[in-house]
Amino acid sequence: MDIKERIRRTPREEEAPAAASPRGRKGGAAMLLLRWSLPAAALVVCAALLLLLAGGSAARRGHLLDADPSGRDDPRLVRPRDEDGTSGSPVVVKDKLLGGLLVPGFDEQSCLSRYQSVLYRRISPHFPSTYLLERLRKQEALQKKCGPRTEFYRKAVEQLKSGQDIKVMDCNYLVWTAYSGLGNRILTIASAFLYAILTNRVLLVDGDKGTADLFCEPFPETSWLLPSDFPIKQFKNFSIGSPESYGNMLKSKVVHSSPAFLYLHLAHDYSEYDKLFFCEDNQQYLQTIPWLILKSDNYFVPSLFLIPAYQEELMRLFPQRDAVFHHLGRYLFHPSNAVWGMITRYYDSYLARADEKLGIQIRVFDTETGPFQHVLDQVLACTFKEHLLPEVNTQEPIVSPRKAKSKAALVTSLNSGYCDKFRNMYWEHPTANGETISFHQPSHEEHQNSDKKMHNRKAWAEIYLLSLSDVMVTSAWSTFGYVAQGLSGLKPWLLFKPENRTAPDPPCRQVLSMEPCFHAPPFYDCKTKRGTDTGKLVPHVTHCEDMSWGLKLVDQN
Image (cartoon, rainbow, N blue to C red; front, side, top):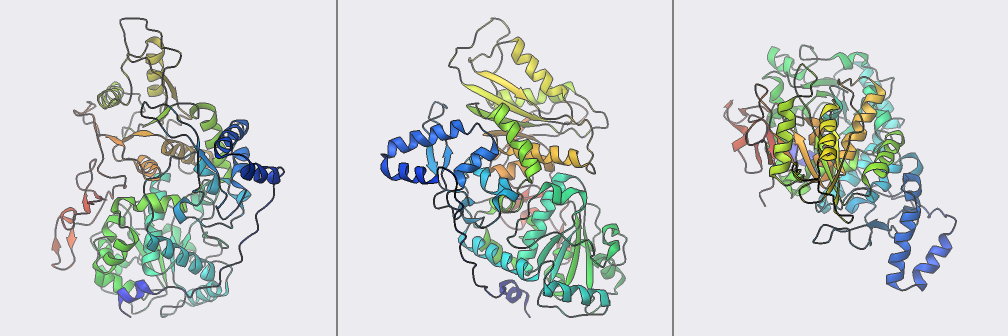
């Protein structure tokens, strides 16, 4: 079957389950009575008072979202900014389902963040396409039909155990292997999910490194976690040298007609043969393999846009080219209740009351821990130059007016020294414009340790908190920052990577798009079979601001 035809193959439509009836709450009838009896202006005032009385906790905020799981009576209170930057009157917005990305019907208590995130996040100006929503619903049906504990999955595993050459089945699978740090893992899951959509595969994720502890299940009525009794026990140890690797099979010219599974090595150290994954003729062959096992630490989405067989489909899915991760990330990655509690407690305690929230993410790639003066100088030069932070007045003891604009700066870094220096500077000296500035840093782990549960929880909580900013500064090469900017829908100011411990000039620039950078793309023209600059083949795939050889998606419209 032609590869373009296979892309359009979709699972048989299943009957939609009956809509769940709304769960009642004490006082629900009174709220409905108020809704119909009070004038519109009074309704707004009442809703605002309810939010204030909610006390800021995620559990209490959740009461505002329980009126109707379909989202029709989903009151979301937000405070739009007036022209002077102050908070305006609260308005009601109905977008619990994020423009249709999400579906109703989940057990809300098992994953509070799924429907409560709208109470914390700014309204996204980026809307998913109707076609993306359609394909997400079809992917959900496929995951339910073929996922763990189904008869289709049982049969697929039995065939896999047989070890014999088998043909493509009704249900075919992509297994994602947990690898590298949290930011990399999030980006590669998103990449794998898009590839699964393009090739009509069920995505199953390895639960190692705390995947189940960090994220809620994204698909309704099924699990995306790979069962622990998966028969290929050694898959976590596959690497560039594994004979099961597709690249090694191409190199050795021992590609079988229809093996039960293949290993795809798409990590940073992959070989020229592994990179042939991105060629269309190899994609044709991979369509015949029932099980693909993937290991990567790269956001390889930009190179999927360069495969001719997928281009038309991708254009329909993402007419706004630079919103791929923004949509997929908000669809897939909902913090678990344990992490959501950390997020909401910190946000409500330190960030909620500020007129503006500035996120500053500092990642230093150095063998020493720091803090380094040149990094501090660079961050200050960037935030002053771009008017993200006010300068301080070192000459006069100006007292900020009582009604001055307040700004909360969230600093994320492995080291506490930078936040301490910022905080001391703004404590010892008044701001030149009268603004009040507060600095907050949730944790300072000193060293990255991706194998520890609490370290990963803190990292995910801080990524998410960073993504709730109104303005953002991120560090070059950092997947932590890429995830935060993608979830937020912001184009951050990017701190260039220092060389020789010297602050670069200019210190930063605003990025072209919110998309992450593919750090290790192939430079190969599959048609001519020669090397080429893959950042110059199509207008919407270009080189990254922070890594000249990397690739990222931009929107030319």
